[in-house]
Image 1 (cartoon, rainbow, N blue to C red):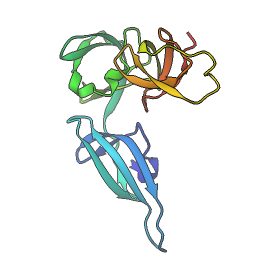
Image 2: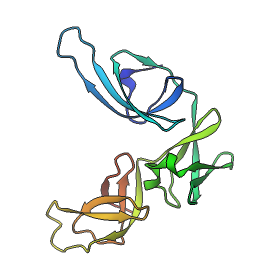
Image 3: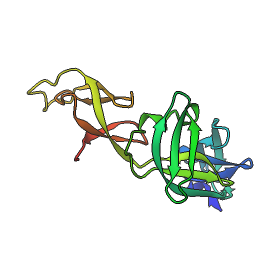
Image 4: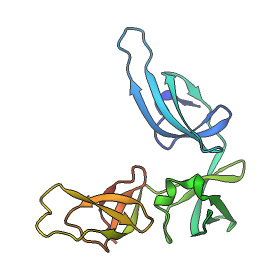
Length: 190
């Protein structure tokens, strides 16, 4: 059983008879004596992909859904779906592109650390590593001497995702991106 104090990004709870992924939480403490702490939670139903905002009182409990995590390998994409292979069973499966809108920003050939979430023995969602290294494909030229300023410029990555990078970075370099926020973290070390 999970309680409201256990809810944080990435936790999967059983809510309304379906597995829900916690995308974000916000806690507000009561101002009056005897008031309950309120937890505002953004959830995503892993079966229907619908997002909902719910408020829970401190002390509410939730069931733990029967969700298994398996390491997978991204194989390729076609116009309608992404294709993967389960590294344990070598079984291949696909997930529709509209079900992976956020994850698609970070899926590239050779990505490591991806896991599939299985519910009732069927893959329903992906769990990405916290960071990925992606190639910059388009940005304005770097300006020497601007490394001391905090100014940024947009850069398009190989997946089409756009991040803000420091002005002094040239194109055609790999950068590290946080998959939880989509933000630039730094130059890639590889």
